[in-house]
Image (tube, rainbow, N blue to C red):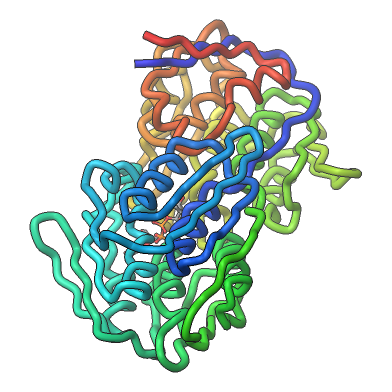
Length: 419
Ligand code: UD1
């Protein structure tokens, strides 16, 4: 088991370059099997989750190549030989379920294991299945797999009970080649949805009003190959912004899209941290003492649940008391216990956490319980006295690429130790 050892960091400085967004690239890679022609995707981050998704595409029969130094993936699914995903691969990431929509559209059948991913809640797939059923597929659950079949898919009005990111993406991908018009109401509006819709339109799909909560998809007969560059990762950007905030440092974030960061810059402002757009990036700097803030996670453009843990680390050392409410996932405070081991004062009750800022955190041994909880521990470790050892870092490496190198580049003392 590998671990990170991080020493207290008085100050970060310099600049960090943000990679392509994990949550945008995964559905985009899945969408590549909608056509038999080649798709070329740029700004593909070398992440564990991306490698699993590429393996899944290969296992279905697609030709896949990935040039890690150029961050370029080429996928050509001339033939889909299998419409079944293996448990060993799919169990590793939740986004494996995003293959179901494209497989249904291309093959009329799909058999996918119930998905894995972070243990942050029950994470059902009922909204995905409801959408497929309304488009004309028959679905059933059998021995841990979900099976879906259809003779053809037909456009429908689909209303989502919750603006689920994954369900919106999966239904959108299933509907692009359905007969007639599909309307998804109460759709998710995250930037990653917009990125996927733009890629699908480059492939010849006719999707409009994406980025609003009513998406219209006019079915087309077939799709062609396309080239696309994935948007920057707003969660990675937010993580580095939080690292600047906790260490009271000024850093520059390159390749971030300020338009995607509204909720994050607003929350940092409340905490006394300024963000400024400068030539080629964002400058993040402290305006004074870090001040506690309340925070409630919401679907976009609300505060992202994926940064809730990281921002809890800020409240843990800020002046005052902050109340954090998690409305998206039911079990997303796993970092609180680990932060308390470092000396934080966090009380959780259901979906609410009350964080009393402490003067000092202390380095100790902690574990990344999930991807974003792990990122929260790195941010906290930069501020903690002495040395922090973070175990189970495979969670972190599912979603942050070159994180050690990137923090080292900013002057942090962080090493990865193989055990
Ligand atoms: C995606 C992101 C994840 C992020 C989340 C919310 C990817 C690969 N992952 O996950 O990082 O935290 O959006 O921004 O893009 N739900 C149902 N039934 C369903 C689907 C979802 O009840 O069929 C519930 C979930 O349990 C959860 C909520 O809806 O409570 C939000 O989930 P969803 O938006 O679907 O998240 P994911 O797409 O899984």
